[in-house]
Length: 148
Image (cartoon, rainbow, N blue to C red; front, top):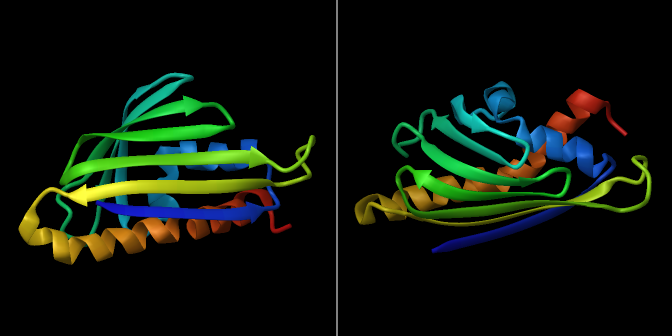
Protein backbone atom coordinates (compact mmCIF):
# COMPACT_ATOMS: atom_id res chain seq x y z
CA UNK A 1 0.00 0.00 0.00
CA UNK A 2 1.26 3.48 -0.90
CA UNK A 3 1.33 6.09 1.89
CA UNK A 4 1.56 9.83 1.17
CA UNK A 5 1.60 12.69 3.67
CA UNK A 6 1.87 16.36 2.62
CA UNK A 7 1.50 19.58 4.61
CA UNK A 8 1.62 23.31 3.91
CA UNK A 9 1.24 26.58 5.78
CA UNK A 10 -1.09 28.91 3.92
CA UNK A 11 -2.19 32.53 4.46
CA UNK A 12 -5.88 31.57 4.30
CA UNK A 13 -8.23 30.57 7.09
CA UNK A 14 -9.00 26.94 7.90
CA UNK A 15 -12.59 27.70 6.92
CA UNK A 16 -11.54 29.01 3.48
CA UNK A 17 -9.36 25.98 2.74
CA UNK A 18 -11.97 23.53 4.04
CA UNK A 19 -14.59 25.10 1.76
CA UNK A 20 -12.35 24.68 -1.31
CA UNK A 21 -11.58 21.02 -0.62
CA UNK A 22 -15.20 20.28 0.30
CA UNK A 23 -16.56 21.83 -2.95
CA UNK A 24 -16.13 18.62 -4.95
CA UNK A 25 -18.39 19.88 -7.72
CA UNK A 26 -15.76 22.54 -8.58
CA UNK A 27 -12.84 20.11 -9.03
CA UNK A 28 -13.12 19.91 -12.86
CA UNK A 29 -12.54 23.69 -13.02
CA UNK A 30 -8.99 23.46 -11.65
CA UNK A 31 -7.80 19.83 -11.40
CA UNK A 32 -6.75 18.88 -14.96
CA UNK A 33 -7.07 15.12 -14.37
CA UNK A 34 -10.65 15.49 -13.04
CA UNK A 35 -13.15 15.39 -15.89
CA UNK A 36 -16.39 15.35 -13.88
CA UNK A 37 -17.83 14.92 -10.40
CA UNK A 38 -21.17 13.74 -9.12
CA UNK A 39 -22.43 14.28 -5.59
CA UNK A 40 -24.76 11.43 -4.59
CA UNK A 41 -25.46 12.54 -1.02
CA UNK A 42 -24.63 15.70 0.94
CA UNK A 43 -25.24 16.69 4.55
CA UNK A 44 -23.40 18.86 7.08
CA UNK A 45 -21.33 15.85 8.20
CA UNK A 46 -21.07 13.64 5.09
CA UNK A 47 -20.69 13.68 1.32
CA UNK A 48 -20.77 10.66 -0.99
CA UNK A 49 -19.34 11.60 -4.37
CA UNK A 50 -17.81 10.20 -7.55
CA UNK A 51 -14.77 11.72 -9.21
CA UNK A 52 -14.38 10.80 -12.88
CA UNK A 53 -10.80 10.78 -14.06
CA UNK A 54 -9.66 11.73 -17.51
CA UNK A 55 -6.80 10.47 -19.60
CA UNK A 56 -5.23 7.98 -17.20
CA UNK A 57 -6.36 4.38 -17.14
CA UNK A 58 -7.83 4.29 -13.65
CA UNK A 59 -11.21 3.30 -14.97
CA UNK A 60 -14.15 5.64 -15.15
CA UNK A 61 -13.67 7.02 -11.67
CA UNK A 62 -14.04 6.29 -8.00
CA UNK A 63 -16.61 6.99 -5.31
CA UNK A 64 -15.80 7.95 -1.73
CA UNK A 65 -17.70 8.62 1.46
CA UNK A 66 -16.34 11.79 3.03
CA UNK A 67 -16.98 12.28 6.73
CA UNK A 68 -16.88 15.99 7.52
CA UNK A 69 -15.96 17.96 10.61
CA UNK A 70 -16.71 21.46 9.28
CA UNK A 71 -13.62 23.68 8.99
CA UNK A 72 -11.44 20.99 10.63
CA UNK A 73 -11.24 17.74 8.66
CA UNK A 74 -12.47 15.59 5.78
CA UNK A 75 -12.00 11.83 6.10
CA UNK A 76 -12.33 9.84 2.85
CA UNK A 77 -13.16 6.14 2.51
CA UNK A 78 -13.53 4.21 -0.73
CA UNK A 79 -17.02 3.07 -1.68
CA UNK A 80 -16.29 1.94 -5.24
CA UNK A 81 -13.51 2.17 -7.80
CA UNK A 82 -10.31 0.63 -9.20
CA UNK A 83 -8.65 0.53 -5.79
CA UNK A 84 -8.21 -2.36 -3.41
CA UNK A 85 -8.02 0.30 -0.73
CA UNK A 86 -8.27 4.10 -0.64
CA UNK A 87 -8.31 6.17 2.55
CA UNK A 88 -7.52 9.82 3.00
CA UNK A 89 -7.62 12.57 5.57
CA UNK A 90 -7.51 16.33 5.05
CA UNK A 91 -6.95 18.45 8.17
CA UNK A 92 -7.19 22.22 8.53
CA UNK A 93 -5.58 23.76 11.63
CA UNK A 94 -5.85 27.48 12.37
CA UNK A 95 -2.58 29.19 13.25
CA UNK A 96 -4.23 31.91 15.32
CA UNK A 97 -7.49 33.14 16.77
CA UNK A 98 -8.61 35.12 13.74
CA UNK A 99 -9.10 34.50 10.04
CA UNK A 100 -6.05 36.62 9.18
CA UNK A 101 -3.60 34.17 10.79
CA UNK A 102 -3.66 31.49 8.13
CA UNK A 103 -3.67 27.75 8.69
CA UNK A 104 -1.80 24.50 8.30
CA UNK A 105 -3.33 22.08 5.83
CA UNK A 106 -2.38 18.42 5.71
CA UNK A 107 -3.30 15.55 3.43
CA UNK A 108 -2.64 11.92 4.25
CA UNK A 109 -3.56 9.30 1.66
CA UNK A 110 -3.16 5.52 1.64
CA UNK A 111 -4.10 3.57 -1.48
CA UNK A 112 -3.54 0.40 -3.42
CA UNK A 113 -4.65 -0.28 -7.00
CA UNK A 114 -6.71 -3.49 -7.09
CA UNK A 115 -5.49 -4.92 -10.42
CA UNK A 116 -1.99 -6.39 -9.85
CA UNK A 117 -1.10 -6.01 -13.53
CA UNK A 118 -1.88 -2.28 -13.53
CA UNK A 119 -0.52 -1.56 -10.04
CA UNK A 120 3.10 -0.95 -11.16
CA UNK A 121 2.01 1.43 -13.90
CA UNK A 122 -0.80 3.30 -12.18
CA UNK A 123 0.61 3.67 -8.66
CA UNK A 124 3.18 6.29 -9.77
CA UNK A 125 0.51 8.15 -11.76
CA UNK A 126 -1.94 8.33 -8.86
CA UNK A 127 0.93 9.18 -6.48
CA UNK A 128 1.78 12.18 -8.65
CA UNK A 129 -1.88 13.27 -8.63
CA UNK A 130 -2.11 13.02 -4.83
CA UNK A 131 1.22 14.82 -4.34
CA UNK A 132 0.00 17.71 -6.52
CA UNK A 133 -3.29 18.23 -4.65
CA UNK A 134 -2.06 20.60 -1.92
CA UNK A 135 -0.40 22.85 -4.49
CA UNK A 136 -3.54 22.78 -6.65
CA UNK A 137 -5.72 23.86 -3.73
CA UNK A 138 -3.28 26.62 -2.73
CA UNK A 139 -3.37 27.92 -6.31
CA UNK A 140 -7.18 27.72 -6.24
CA UNK A 141 -7.20 29.70 -2.96
CA UNK A 142 -5.10 32.43 -4.65
CA UNK A 143 -7.69 32.58 -7.45
CA UNK A 144 -10.73 32.58 -5.14
CA UNK A 145 -9.51 34.67 -2.20
CA UNK A 146 -6.70 36.75 -3.73
CA UNK A 147 -2.98 36.29 -3.34
CA UNK A 148 -1.80 37.18 0.16
